[in-house]
Amino acid sequence: MTDRIAYADVEVGTELPAQTFPVTRATLVQYAGASGDFNPIHWNEKFAKEVGLPDVIAHGMFTMAEAIRVVTDWTGDPGAVVEYGVRFTKPVVVPNDDQGATIEVSGKVAAKLDDNTVRVDLTATSAGQKVLGMSRAVVRLP
Amino acid sequence: MALDQSFVGRTYPPTDPYEVGREKIREFAEAVGDANPAYTDPEAAKALGHPDVIAPPTFVFAITFRAARQVIADPKLGLDYNRVVHGDQRFAYRRPVRAGDRLTVTSTIETIKSLAGNDILDVRGEVHDEAGELVVTAWTKLVARAAEEA
Image (cartoon, rainbow over all chains, first blue to last red; front, side, top):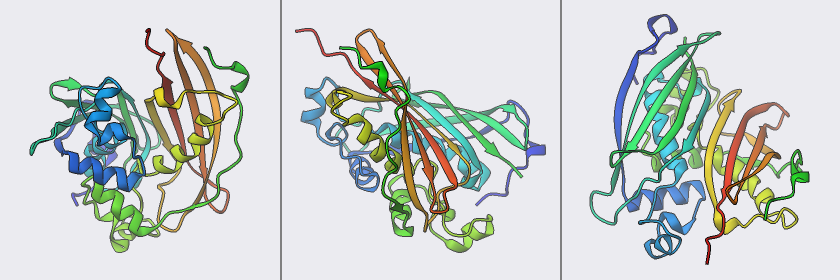
């Protein structure tokens, strides 16, 4: 774990370390089991195509879970997250090969708020497309 | 067909308690590839000021979504669940979810809109612990896509 980031040391525009998260079909099966979301669009190619998707797609909540890691890895304490919200704009398409897909996430401090909190705006892309919109977290710093 | 606006403001009965287990948190953290020790090591969690291991921020969705399904599946509401996609998700946390919590969810329909044939439903889930304290509020936007033209 890194040293805790202090409110006083953060400025608007401070960039959080960007991260890339891999996602394969195996990841999705594992996430389905852990989360209880067994919607076949996340593991059954035939079904996904029948409902008009290009291929199997990642759970939106999986992408949301990865994106906040840029924030929780930065603060060290995941309990520091006070608010977190996203819009699911584009699906993360996960091909059935060894590579799968990747989700790239960056974040920066957009505002310093009261009570030692800051708002972080996140950007998440996959295959060059923005997959989350309005992705924002508020975290309380020491 | 547009959904019945009289469902706006409707609150469903609280769910039975969901007991958050350490191993379930570990399983979820592994599934998202997150090695933060606050999720698996009670001592690391205590060093951060938590009484036990805490859950990743989005973990609680599994519980609130299960509660929201009682809304989605309400036959009187008549939403076509096969056409439902997840539009937005937002959480406001009073404190992190942690191992040992016994959580109940109370779901309320906040808004119902009809836009270009799509039914858009905002469901608020309030998650309380055994002491009755609010732990987290989850807002879930569900979009039932319009049926395709033949």
